[in-house]
Image (cartoon, rainbow, N blue to C red; front, side, top):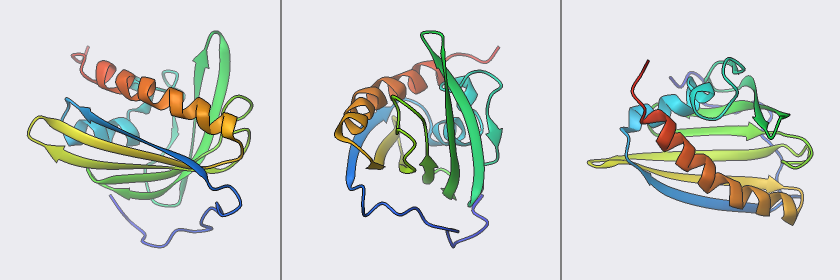
Length: 154
């Protein structure tokens, strides 16, 4: 799936060094977890049908989530896509999210006999409160990935 090796306009994070790391063993095959992040994000995270984009290096995407009746747009671009191994993308949301800062989410995947080991780093937060909100949210989001992607297809 990787088509280009050079990231166009790499994000500048040195002025925003706040980040986090979350790890989780997910009881799903690595190919399922990879697809969840690259082509099926609206099955477990985004509002159904809202994902626009293609998981290719240097390619933009958009989706939205809805929480307590409030719409939350998410914008970014895929930086690195290596099938069943790594997804790196910029991640921009508004108030209550990244506060407009271009952050970087890196998802490293390792296939195991009993599922997938996922290591997620999220870097470049503009404030401690934004970082702390995401530190609290990512474990919930990853549990939701596992639960929703484990359901039988309709």
